[in-house]
Structure formats: structure tokens, C-alpha cells
Length: 502
Image 1 (tube, rainbow, N blue to C red):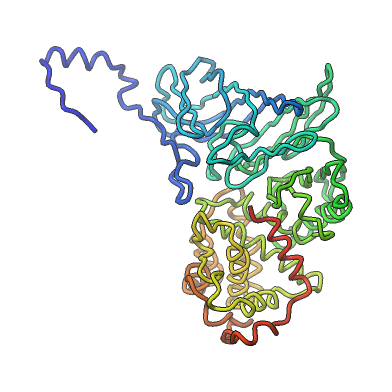
Image 2 (cartoon, helix red, strand yellow):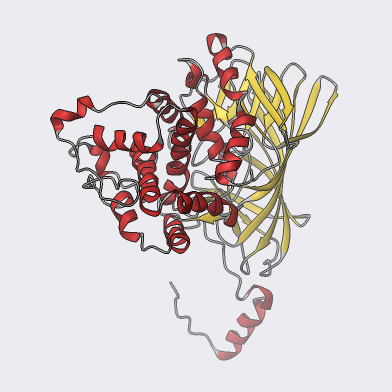
């Protein structure tokens, strides 16, 4: 609100002279990027290109100390800007000069430079901090999970708040160096390639490097006692898998699943195009959580995901996310279907490859087995709402939408779309509408009505299109649902999806 101030003209001239010309048109960066579901996520006014995190963690006390260096470019003339962060800050420097800072809200670190920052200026921001992450609660929640011998941070849509300051939204990706010093009797696991490791005075420092653009929520850290396996793929990519030493009865089934990661990535490369990153693997800490997460290059898995035996379908889901969700990320969290619908459909394609039920059989099973009056059909995968973001309809109905597309455009065009989409949008961000337009361009067909039916209509569609673009069979009656044949892989797929939902 602007208030009118009436002063003598000479005094007015003095006031104007008192305001430095460089500050006259500087404005604060927005405290959020305007995401539909999470308005305070991310920040405006700058774009981060790299994070250098130098950390020290003591498992016995859960004390984390850190110095984060962010390399960024301003996108407007800035009087101040925000970072998303929730631990205690002791100092902030911008280009080596001390900056004022204050904590506002639950996770906003408001930084004011000593003088305004020009638009298009490359800056370095250093934040020194410390805290006990497991004791920091936002809306009653912490993404930092303690384990018997350490801790792990892996959560969606937010996890960075608890261990490093960031522009915490998928639209601002960056590269990462994560250097972690821990006591010699434990190890530190993170994303990318282990660039180096050294020990001194009872502490070992692990230096992990991610050289491809990575969203903040996909950046992970695990500290504990692990059995680590290493290998290389046929084309030389390093594979690092880590399993807590105290997984008990779940250890063998976890290893039987995750040790197939290289095989699954090789298969995925034939379906989705070249693997987008320079490392892969997975890790299983001893946590009581019940979900998995596609943390970039090294997915996180809860032990419970393997409680009923090997769960290769879960590994397929998380590794498919490396293309759909990690390399090509959402523009807005309402676009979650471009992550989950595709990762689920990858499970169906794996089932098809393994001879345990075709994608068409699985899609028809979903369609036939869920009655029209079930709340499942009221969830719109294309915009499910924040409270339904990880609803099973986003996964299963979302995958049926892809089978409907396949049946409509034919296998040749469909698999061209499936392979070229992640290649043409590599390391970028995309919306549901972007995919619809892309599918229409490649196929030469008007597909918006098809996607409106399957992604945006809160009711059961009249039928699933049959292969070849023909009309599908109408919905079954309530009496016939129980007789719907279940594909062999369905139980494992459901277990995998339950383990992925957050």
C-alpha cells in the first residue's frame, strides 16, 4: 500500500537523494514459486546452479553441522531473497560479505544483502548452520529419520528443509557436491558418484558428486553401518548398492531385488531411451517407514518393501522414475501423473516382458475390477489435489490412461512417444498438458478428449479403448467384478505401489 506524503519540495529532493540509485528499483524475491499445491515451496528472484554441502554428523547425538555454498544467478534486481530451511543459522555471506538474515514462518530463511543485487548477477551464498534435524518439526512432521546406527533423509515433496538450505521446488534443479564427515564405524551414502573418501582422527569423509541437474527433494543422505556392493554396467556406469547390516529377514529379499538394478536400467534404456545419469544403485536403511523414493541415481527403499520376498517390481518403479520424475520433473506438483503414471506403466511393461500379464491385461483388470461407484474413480490423476497426490488412482488409473493412449495410437507410435519424450525433455520440467500436446504432435491425432476422459473426469469412463483404436467393452456389472481374472504379477505390482506411496 502506498501512502501519500506531502513535504516541501526542497525536502522532497533531499529524500530522493538519500535513496541510492542502485536500490531504487530493487524488490524482494517471492517467498514461493506459486505452486498450486504448495504455495510456499521454492522461492523467486534467483536460479541455483550448484550446491556444495560440507557436513559433519554425529549419530549418537543426531547433531548435524554444515556449511552450504550455493552458486546462483539473480533473475531480478533483488533487495532480499529467501531460502527454504529449518535448522539454526549462525552466518550468511553473499559474495564473501556478511548479509543480514532472519527466520520467517516455518521454513523461510530471509536474507538481505549489504547492497541490492543486480539482475543477471552470478552470486555465491554461504550459509553456516547446525541443529538436531529429528527434533525439528514442520506441521508436526520431520523428514529426517533416525536409525539404530545413524539417520536417513528421503521424502517427497519436501526433505531438504531438514539438512540444507535450498530453493526447494523441482523447477530449480542444480548439480551437487555432498561431502559428509562421520565417525569411522559408520558410512555415508548419497547421490551420484563417490568421488573420494578419506579418514582422519577417527572420522571418515565421503565426497559424493552429482553432475547432472537434480531437484532438491531427490537429494538424499543416509548414515549408518552398511554392506556395500559395487559393480559397473555393461557400458561402464558405476553401480553402488547399500544395505543396513541389521535388516534381518528382509536382507536377502532386498538384495535379490536391488542387485538387479543394472539389468533393469539396461532394459529401461531400450524402452525409454538412454539412461540419463552417470551412476545408479539403491540403498535400504533400517527404518520403520513404509515407502520407497526415487532419489536420483540411488533410490531409497524401506525394508518393509521386501517383507514378502523379492520385489523386483518396486525396483522397476523407482528406476523408471529416473527418466520420469528425475530427469523430466514436474512443473507443478499437480502434474504428479507425469511421474507416477509412467513409473507404474513401466511395471506393467516389465510384467509383459516377464510373461506375467500384459499391460493390456493389467489395464483391463483395473478397469473391470473397480466398480463405478468406488471413490477410486473420483480422483483425477491429472490434478488429484494435494491430499490425493499419492492416491492409488494416480498410479493405476494413471497407467490405464497410458494403455488407452497405446491402444488409440498403436504400438509403433506409442513407443516412439515413450522413448522420445524423456529424451527431448531431458533434465527439464514438464506438465500434463505438455505431454498431451507432445503425444498429439507425434501421433497426428487429436488426443485431448482421450486424456480429459482418463485424467480429468471424476467418474468411471464408459470403456477402455481396445487395441487398434476400436471401441472397448462396456463396464462390467457389479456381480461380475469378483470373477475378473487377476494377472499373475498384480499382487507384486500392488505391493510395489503401496511401498512407493508416501
